[in-house]
Length: 270
Image (cartoon, rainbow, N blue to C red; front, side):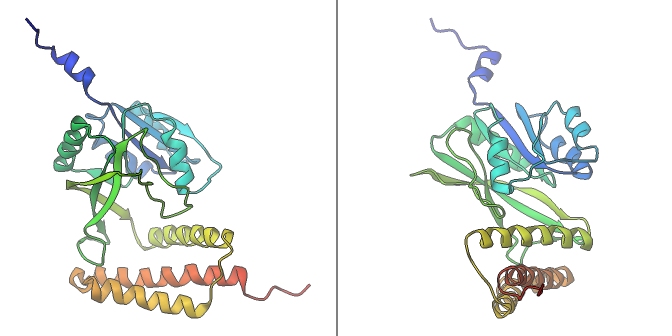
């Protein structure tokens, strides 16, 4: 007669799950992020890019596997490097300013237990910024692929706005539940982050031989505002929706202006 496997044997047969993060100076966020997953993942992998705060000490409290690559290669390459340290069957990607809700947790665990081949999973992010959850502006729903079999997929090598490369014939499933995203602490934090993204965007475009113009920047900035505030109903997010639409238009103009200055603006005569 067949014996029913013990609970420990059943657990061993389940695919293992890692959460992976790339971080720098995230002491203010990391504890809450890891607390939302630590009790139900098998492995925590963190690749740091040169933190000078207590990021490493907080990671140690959660027995995270902590690695450092201070020579920043861009977001995509850094994620690819981090994934190389993951030993678990599945990897769940998070940013330090994100938190997994109980509903999303249950759906993540169900997906891992089902262990469907060549299947990737999208999670939805709900962003809290400037004192409000943003449910319009094109920010919600904000579905991003974050969960997949470690050996079946990985991020592309984009310097910024990196995405998971889709394997041939892959199925993408949307998981129910939200990840809460605390993206900006204040206006200064927004400006610093957006400047970094703009620089990385211009670096990437310049490396590909692309050029720009100020008129392109103006047109794209106007288009960005109209899309966020009117088409995507940012006005329903109140003053925060207006502010985000203006700031996003500004950031859009800045990245085109940066590329124009690099490639078209006259150089100082010697």
